[in-house]
Length: 295
Image (cartoon, rainbow, N blue to C red; front, side, top):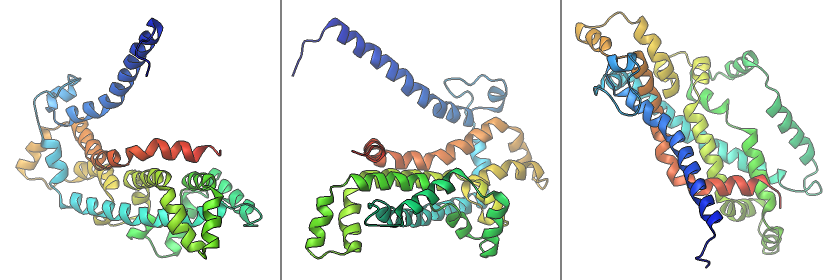
């Protein structure tokens, strides 16, 4: 190990550390600022005085959001959507990526399927045909309309395919010699060896399901069936349109800023993913780099 470093090397390390620290703070500050705004007083938020620390602690925005039972039902809908949708998407993508990772000699329709995936990734059918298809299958106002309509992200399939191609062919050949079939090779060899890319794709899919709100506006007619992001988007309209407030509720609303309320919504929607990310972060870089370049 070399302990003595040149002056230029030390300067580079210092400058590099400063740049990385600034980048880290620039990523963390929006989250911290959002939290500060969400717990600050109406006067301080409207006057633009909140910069680094909360001013006049006020948790009224969180009370307004969490007071309604619809909030908790929307959280439950989103949790079901994330769990079921992620399981379905990961299963479909793994089953689709395995044959596409083969050579053209092993799977003759490989190139045709790849071009179809590229086409659907570049061109979208449009919102109206999308809605008509979901309605034709009788999925309107159901949880499955929020899951099936986005259950096969093509970009993630390409990541898994690229990773599968990099696995040594000797593993599959040895398994075939031992009498293993395609299902055994896929689930007992390919999947365990692809944990980094599968964890990365799982994070992409779960975050996508959690943050998506437009499908709730498009396919869900009953407010009780809204996912969390759709509920959060609609709550301002509901608050503005609802005139059946008690005197106490009206006074509570006048004490909270719309900016603070919006900040509270954004912060609440970020917390679950922020709690999950640290457990998958160690796979993230490995999964992206190994699945992106064919060696």
